[in-house]
Length: 299
Image 1: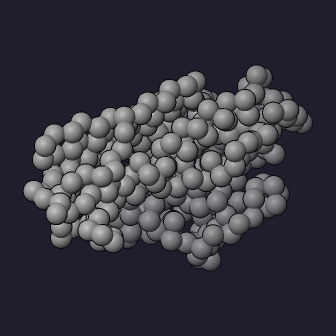
Image 2: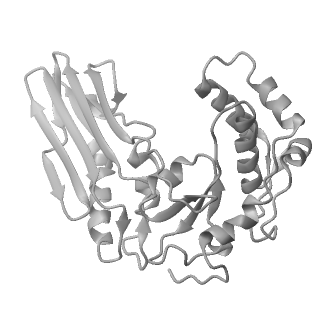
Image 3: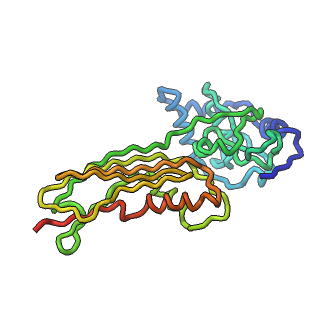
């Protein structure tokens, strides 16, 4: 990214925001106390205050569209809506009003010169943001004094074990005595959304920054009743390249089949030259033929 600023530093630019933050008024304190009545822990209080702020209406004006101006917290409360920046300022004010340490953070593009970015480069103001925490290796996160901040990451590791019973009463009945069984996947897994929307095309002319690095492992224990004969099951497969690794391992026994499926990506920023490798991993990981089992009732 190429950025330019009329401010001497990020700190000077952020003063425009910082000087607008008022000390907590009586109304803010009373609201914070009212919202957290009955909460026993700090985390519970944070959750209640966050739920209140998230429940306010959203004004989609950006910082630049508002002239880098924030309405007072009391006005945001009165009007019951706010911009992203105003809601961040309100959340910080509510938490501070009941003794919780909170501060507003700003995200900038990462540049070689740490001061080479002004207000126009701010991609967001927030108190907590899991999405930015996941990509903080690719952005610059600072407090309103322009001091670097390290955000706590949330684990995206998926480890799931499912047991399936194969009988002439389970699965989906097909013609000629065949029955189909689909292997379950976690609803929040990579294949449920990210894998699909990031692999819609076979070529990509620009960089792709993934939301996070998936690390998923699924174990399926397939219990087979007498009289059921496996016709189609996944085969052992392993694909490893510069982007990551995808592996399927199948272990068969007389009355049981164990299937292990794993996906682990190593690169969060995928360049156009690396995209074919990423696309191949996704095509294999989301191949429906690898997620279905076909059995036939023995005659």
